[in-house]
Image (cartoon, rainbow over all chains, first blue to last red; front, side):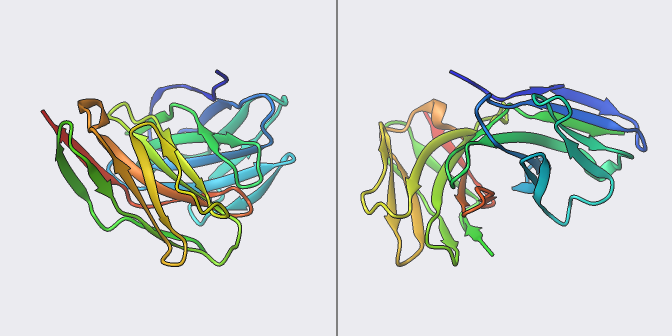
Length: 113
Length: 113
């Protein structure tokens, strides 16, 4: 069964450092998303990406965040200068669109010290 | 804007018994999907069941079924014959036309042996 793959599974970084989280979507999916879940809290939408551009972003997704799909396969989330409050689980999700099901990766746990 | 409300923070059920998890939502869209996701301690997001809003028939997936009340904007999940492996966080979620998922706060379900 096809699946969404995320790397790394866990990353520890110092405050102020840049972090890149990677996602390999299911091959025929066209819609890509990043979600964030701070420990013990709800899953929050960060950004959606379609046709090589951001289609929607939340208030959380400020100038410190960026996404891209540089090589047509990997879908990346970059945090330029991490803050303590960026510590969370980051989920990549992909779908075929048309309000259908989203498939989630196993998540990347980011710990900012 | 879409909102999803899960008012019960946690529930407990005896193994082999039935439990119902509540969810209400709000949307201005006519076409949308509703989902229940399970998040075990591993923190992976696993789709349990989905309901298309235009379908009147309640979705069923083995021991999992929903009670979809469109007029009341209610979408509860019933778990029959509860198993220890059902212990997890359960999130109710909704998509709209852009496939963006909006999650509720989640409910922690504990299955007692």
